[in-house]
Image 1 (tube, rainbow, N blue to C red):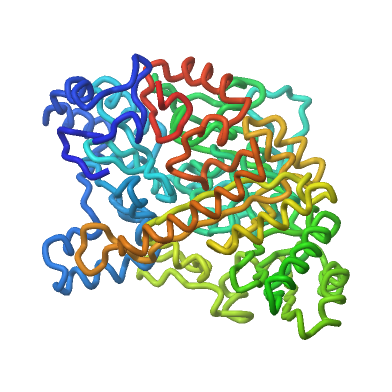
Image 2 (image 1 turned 135 degrees about the vertical axis):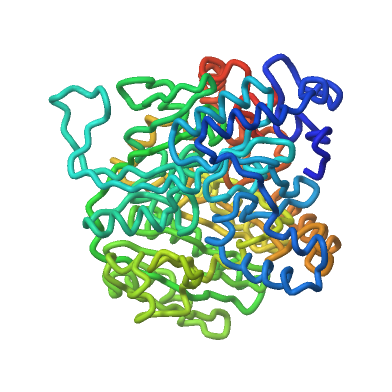
Length: 585
């Protein structure tokens, strides 16, 4: 969103929404925003937050002055590290989206350390009519934690983590049974949460990427991880939230008090109803083992690949649509299925046996099919342990090598392409379980084959709740997530990006021709998927920036109630994010 400070939002309502009084034109916005708060007003805010109002600079500021300078070279090198990016008030994991938005810098940020800091920032934004943006870890594909001419609430420092042997939500009856739980501050990353839970023999359901924030948009948008068919969504595992609403009040939300807000915050979208300062998550007894399946099933011809897809679609419901399996299968134009899957509490022999009904027949026909599969089973306690991976498979992780890094902090090397990325296109769609049944299977086979001719089609089976554990489904049905996910066996994600790309930095910008060709190919592939899945919906956190029917596609039937709750707790629409509840009013 390349704009000047006095002309915030060149496409106002389309990007960040407007007020409940109606869509803001550029002229109306400028009139509403003038004048910019005085220096005295900013000084008052600075005093209220104990001096933690800071001026924000771009991590690539040195490159804007001189791309050949050593300072620029060093800045770009540091931006290969997602933890470095998070430690910069002006840093975001995604630098923009083709024709959608470009990361911008807020002039000021409140480097929050407490709920009172956040409340002061909210009061200031409301009273001074300043655009408010919120960022913890900076993982947002749609630019919702980045805006020029805004005040940033930066929660990076709020990373307190506490394990509870027996947690009862505030206000719950004294007879209520306590459960194991983990409380995380607003800036906590999943690596922090996982390691704390593992140390106590437990697991909390979060995202696969270690650097994603544990209390922000991930949870509030639903949140799916590698093991969601076992444990459900992030939203369904929330026991209690502390949140500062638009009136500057800190509220505790759970099933006993502020229950409507609690429901909305678990699936209704981040940055929409308030700013969460702390989340308390249900902690599960840790599984005994996890496993990784890596491999490839390939066909020699188009005809053989259609047969492979037919067999895979028939194989999937009984074998993989259950609490033991998660992660990805890519359907590719070279007539292959690329496998990168995880499994829980199965021995290697049991995991192999799962696949035997499919691969045995393929192996009998080596002229038509190729089978290459590797199974690795490990103790679950090693999953978030850097020392374990250094011994077992060091190339799978990349350590945070900054001098002040927390020991044992790493990210998956497979996520490197998402660090300082620029998105060409990112589209997704849930695939209903019915398309894997005999009556729907021919349509699904044809759809997967045809779509894969344009772009790789990734099936992320953990991001659909068909086949999930009954207790997980019961928890998730109490949230505001899109109901279509309960009938979804998997989600299709088709996306492309430029790695380590920086708009406006000569020599490091995304290639426009490549971007447009890629986006066009993805559009063709997703058109085929959508035709076969009318009304299927998708996971809003990982979806199309340009989706026109976003209310139905991202929220579904809960949208009307979410809007009522939005109006109750944020009557002036202070919290406005792209494709958020009420953003078009």
